[in-house]
Image (cartoon, rainbow, N blue to C red):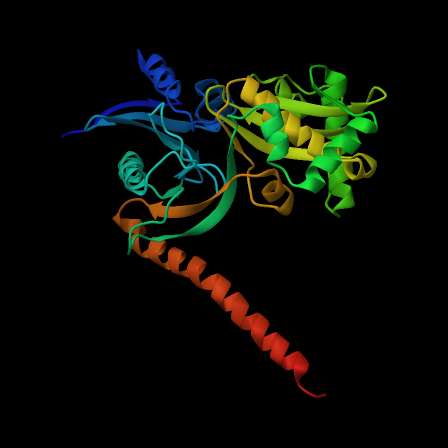
Length: 343
């Protein structure tokens, strides 16, 4: 059966009926995240970051593909968030795609790339001999549980930190003023400096949606932990109602961190994300803190494609990425052996 495609290239006006078809499909795709939001895609395009979006219909199933134009080629997704999806309102697995569906949509992405280099992140390993490598992993947690169940699902230490933060006077609000957003931006700078990284200054009056005003955008969501009227911690998310809530960033004072404010923020995000109709929390990685907050691990493979001219390049790139961890382990062993040798 021949596939039917509806395509929007963001350098052009969306074809008639495209946005209606896209949004109708998103409404039945519980794993979709803010990276599928046509308003977010159009916002990026307005700043010169263009994409190609496609509704794919074939053999009774419907898919969504987003490719971002980068460095003369196409990129789909990230090592913790993919931009391929299948419409299925009843789907409950964290990946949202089967291995076969990943292959199906990757093949369409490769065709849409039109011979240009393709970097495509998918939540399943590639078939044998396909150039690919493990790019990263993330944790996805379902949000269909009540408040008590959320707390019971956490370990004793996390529940204790939650209680401590409340006892010490922290409360969580959705940032809605410029003062709260700018205060969080300053916290981000403070957090980066503690980690030994350079941080950007906080601009006084950025344009709407830029810098610390990104949280004004309808697909962005910033929760802040406040005590005595002062923002002392915050966590930012991307939100797709009836889809996924994606953790993006966190910052706090040391005092707030020790008092458990970040745990309070995470629990409030789970509760409030559920109340907004989100089905999943994507923690955006696999740190110890995120593991303790719960979720199913999904490993993300980077698959390489494009025209025939990229075949050798892709196979070499895939092999180098696969070999790199083994070479690093070998070198660590060599160094350890040398350190044990007598002087």
